[in-house]
Length: 321
Image (cartoon, rainbow, N blue to C red):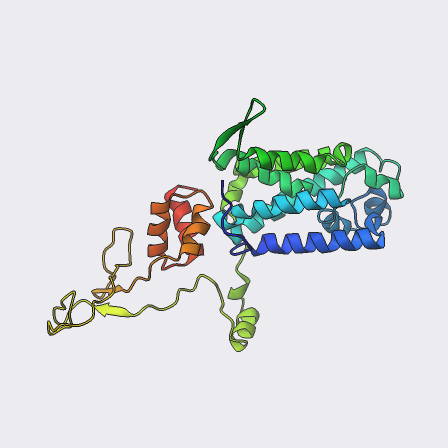
């Protein structure tokens, strides 16, 4: 099983979550301010510290939880690469908001436990809900690549991910069971596509006037989906030999020409086709790490002119996702 090439390529939301979670967790551990960041009854209902609904879903209470939690978030970046950041952002917002509301209701039901500092023991802080909501597509969509046996137990390459999730629960299993459960529930509801939520997408902020003005004046690309222009080959106007120039004279061999346009390979309007650069190895590995076959990955990259995001959308459309 492969989650794609290393790093956070095409996974900016996962990168932001991991950096924020690691920074807050280390700061809370070194300064002893965990009780001011975690989701507690006293903090939410008595002091109205609503920021806890945000920080409580990021900060880990212990180093072992942080290590296994961040590893799982990093591994699950494959789903952002597969769905795209716009759809993955909706998944993150929905699962976190849904789970937070249920946790607040749970705290209210328990009357805040022992209140104050002690109430932090009722629900473990950390992105448990988000992590376990991602176990739903991991279980349903990621195929098993290999099987092996250890001490007579038949395991698969997915078993290590499940064991990491179990290890994440062990340090504070009593207080982390409920956040993990509501995370699984949130992932299942999203999977059921209630209200068509799986088709929702976050807006592209680069389309807004002020953002576009700033990015244009800073000379930054507006979107990673903007394809680089390719030189065109005029189909009419003389016959060119594959091994020579237009006059049939000997010359250097022209690079192989591919046709872009519809999926049927027809030439675009105007009788022109575009030079095709071969799909990069890194792009192919990225998409194959999402579970797509090599042939369909190459075809999607060719049609998308090597744009990984566009190719991802094509692959999802072909599979009806």
